[in-house]
Length: 172
Image (tube, rainbow, N blue to C red; front, side, top):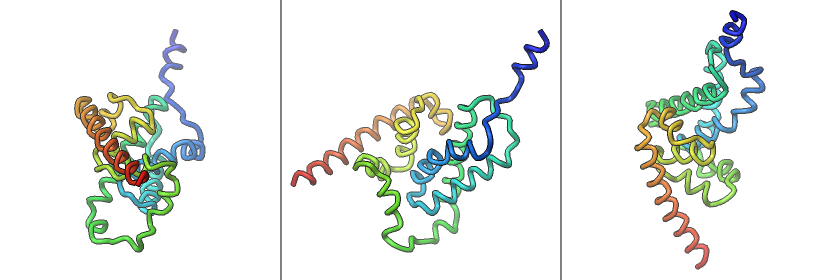
């Protein structure tokens, strides 16, 4: 009986650092891009998130717990960068800085999502691109479920209008 209790207390082991980084780097990068809207800062944020993960003592209960932690840290690091005095005083070097992100877009939908205000963009990315439930998103972003549902509905309305305009422009 004691062996069963001990085996249940074994913490989750995510695998090697290389495996974890390979599994989650795209997700972390997409979320960072959603906040900072340029690939260079998103790459720095991604690197910082995994650096913090490597420094953190392993104590995750499950893979979902680790994934939620990575998302939460990505959001926090992104917001910290956007609030920093350095970031507020810098300007992009060129208009082509976001070319890489645009190349990754498979349709106008991704561009429309990326043009949403930050609070809507994060919710849409987590719900549609990362397949999180409203409850999970509320926990990750520290918002109420009602707030997440409202933000999803408003984002859908904004996206519908943006895509409608884009479609009408394409038809002209």
